[in-house]
Amino acid sequence: MKDFEYFAPKTPDEALSLLSQYKGEAKIVAGCQSMLVVMRQGLLAPEYVVDIKGVSALDYMTYDEREGLRIGALTTHRTIETSPFIQKHLRVLSEMERNLATIQTRNWGTIGGNLCHGDPAGDPAPILIALDAKLKLKSLSGERIVAMEGFSKDMLEVDLEPDEMLIEIQVPTPRPHTGVAHEKLMVMQGDAGIVGAAVSIALRPGDDVCEDARIVLSNAASIPLRAKEAERCLVGKVINEDLLTEAGKVASKEADPSSDVHASAEYRREMVEVFVKRAAKRALQLAKQS
Ligand SMILES: Cc1cc2nc3c(=O)[nH]c(=O)nc-3n(C[C@H](O)[C@H](O)[C@H](O)COP(=O)(O)OP(=O)(O)OC[C@H]3O[C@@H](n4cnc5c(N)ncnc54)[C@H](O)[C@@H]3O)c2cc1C
Image (tube, rainbow, N blue to C red):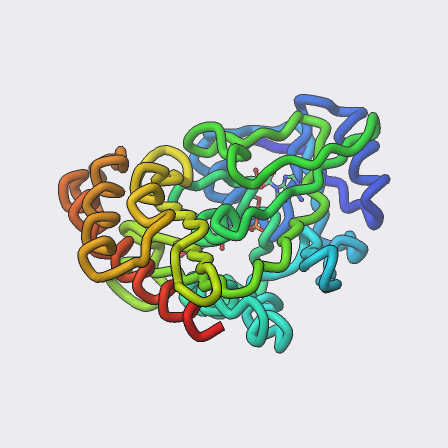
C-alpha cells in the first residue's frame, strides 16, 4: 500500500476543511473496512487520509413524526440493528442489519461508509430507496439533499464531489398501511447477498388496493436497481398470488446481473424472481397488519 498522510479531525468542519484543502487527493475513511480493501488492491491510493471515526457529532439517530428518522453518517450497523426505536417502527432496517456480515463488522462499519462505498451488493441502499430516503451532503461551500435513489452512479461510484461528505440519512415516516420487507440470498448467515430484494407496499385502507409499490434489487446490476415495471404489476390492484409471481418474473427481466465466482448471471436472474416474490409477499402481509 502506498504511504499517505493521516488526519483524525474531531468535528465535521475540520474534516470538510481538510477535504477542501486537499481536494481530489484526500479520501475519507470511517470504519475503513471497505477502504482498506480498495487501497490494498491498489484501486485507490490517496495522498491524504481523513479518518472521521472520531467525529462524534455524526454518530446519532433522532426521530420526529413529521421529520421522520435521521441517522448520522457515522452510526454503526450495530447501533441501527439494536435500536429499540428501529426495532419497533422500522423493523426492516434492524432485520437487514442482523443479516449484514458478522457482529464484529457491524460493530465498526458505518452506514455512511456503506452507502458511499457504492457496492451494488450493499444491503442498506435498496431498503433506503424503498423507504424513499434522502441524503444530506455537505462541503465548505454548502449543503445539498439528494435522493438515495440515484446516489449510486455505477459500481463503486456515487454522487459525491471530492470535497463533500455524507452527513445524514433522512428516512420519512412511512404512510399508514405500508409494509416493507427485505430478503437476500446468502450461502451462510451474514454473507453478502448473491442477490437481494427490498419491497415496500402501501395499501388503500378499506379495499386493500395497492396504492404504491417500490421494488429495489441488490447485486442484480451495477447499482441498486429499482424494478419499475415490476412495481407497475402491483399498483392499482388488489395483490394476489398470481400478481406476486408476475412481479417476480418481470423484475428478473429488468435485472442486469453479472457473473462472478459466487453465481452466474443466469442464476442471479432466477433468484431475483424468487426473492422479489418472497419480499413482496411479506411486505403485503405487513401492510395488511399495519
Ligand atoms: C467481512 C465483511 C463483510 C461485509 N458484508 C457485508 C454485507 O453482507 N452487506 C453489506 O451491505 N455490507 C457488508 N460489508 C460492508 C460493511 O458493512 C461496511 O458498511 C463497509 O465496509 C463500509 O463501512 P466503513 O464505515 O468501513 O466505510 P469505509 O471503508 O471507511 O469507507 C467506504 C467508502 O465510503 C467513503 N465514506 C465513508 N464515510 C463517508 C462519509 N461520511 N462521507 C463521504 N464518504 C464517506 C470512503 O471514502 C470510502 O470511499 C462487509 C464488510 C466486511 C469487511
